[in-house]
Image (cartoon, rainbow, N blue to C red; front, top):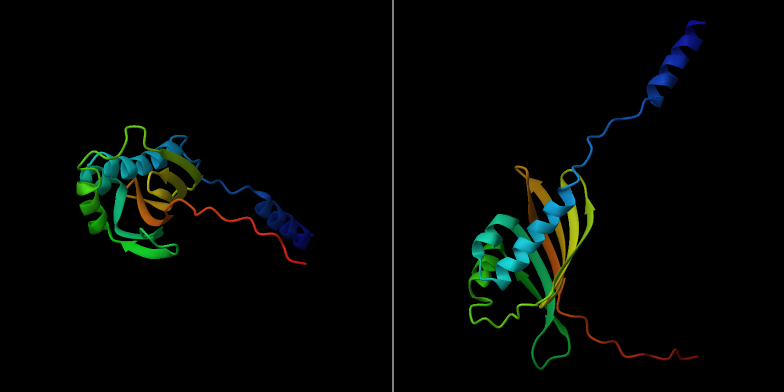
Length: 156
């Protein structure tokens, strides 16, 4: 009888649901705001917005096609380089007022998130993490707009 009572107790303990803290409903919006700080920081020549939304350990890697070439070239950028870029990218006002800044938030957990940004330079896929209660972009993988692929007929 003691064994049955012990097995019942073990079974009931395993059946108790684990309580996970609920994600605040404003977390996806907070992630989106961090991504908008990034893109608008570049568009609006506002390095303070870059510093607010990017973690100093940023790893930004991407691919672009150099003028006159057909193949993609890799490019990396650090936090400091991104801050400098934001000081000069639109200094001459070449970014149109309606430049794209479309944000899709894919996933938000309590400590990490992922998002996609479509901007005038291409597409950025981002990983964000929460540091001291604030969402910061820690990784960016980007490319210029995709090359148009030629339709290829399968050979049989």
